[in-house]
Length: 434
Ligand code: SAH
Ligand code: SF4
Ligand code: F3S
Image (cartoon, rainbow, N blue to C red):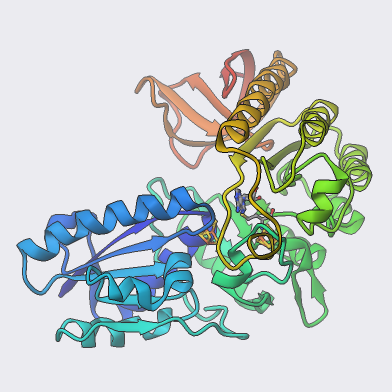
């Protein structure tokens, strides 16, 4: 049996895709290995979101080629977003045997077969229909507690900075029945938490089921499973979704709502279809329906033409919302996007870094404040396993997605446990058993 090794980069969607890929390959007689030294096929499922993500992959391709030179017959493959963006250029490097884009994974067995005869293979066709809905993913997570389920693919939004619509193609929703079937399989394998994934989950629509409908179906079919989802888009998140969350206690109190910028002028240039006021209105609605709901965000520092004043607006929206956590990035120009074609990348790297550092410093304080507000509260957490620090401690997340650690040798991964918060760091709630 040939053995396949896959490294996964980028977003949760790529993790879900790697699980689909292992399933397709298993059906065609390939086994999985986590040891690159014994792999017949070495692949990376890649990300193109920022230039540094791609640079890291080029570094890995060099490492893969050490194996390829050492052991004849080893096939190197590049999958995912970078495969879709760079296409033939990857094969032209001479360092890669197979290139397969996000909608081409069903052809992988054939591509690998032909490539192992010394003929480089590429399939980067995007599809309007492919959702891999019929496939039962092979789970690759370590603890068997929390699983990702992809509910849609692609994106129709075309935010001007973003490469995803080009690498993942048009938006399509997966038949909700296959989502329920996959959730059933997760439950039967003992999973206790499911995260529904899409670039813009609020635009999920299959037949007459919208995202709120899907949430309701999943939450009610699996009352003992915790439901999460990502990512919500401020322009689309509806009161119906918030109401559905509020009325189902197994839907987690956490919304990831990327703001990107606090300046209306920049939001418009980004082609985000909301204003600062709209965003704040949505935050108010979330707090109205669920006062205990955590809100996290993504932000980009130094987008084209961003002034100090725009940057101050970003800092002020962070203060105003008081995000519980954030992913923060410097703008990275992506070839072919609307921004790359229409606007000069005119904020210096030095200035981007300075602004990013200011946002990070502010958010560190906000995360700390958010955690301090939790002192004395009791939370139900889902145990993920031993903490990083000590085998005498367990860790797990509460409904708000905050990491909790507490001394405990009695419970195990997959248990639900009540804990009381007794202290905190910026990233973690320090607890004891309730
Ligand atoms: N679909 C999600 C985001 C997916 S990409 C949404 O719309 O919110 C994840 C994050 O990467 C984005 O939210 C954005 O903050 C960041 N990002 C995307 N393109 C980027 C770029 N060109 N430079 C820097 N950060 C970028
Ligand atoms: Fe990119 Fe915008 Fe689509 Fe998110 S919604 S994936 S940022 S184009
Ligand atoms: Fe990266 Fe593609 Fe996800 S560009 S963030 S792996 S959709």
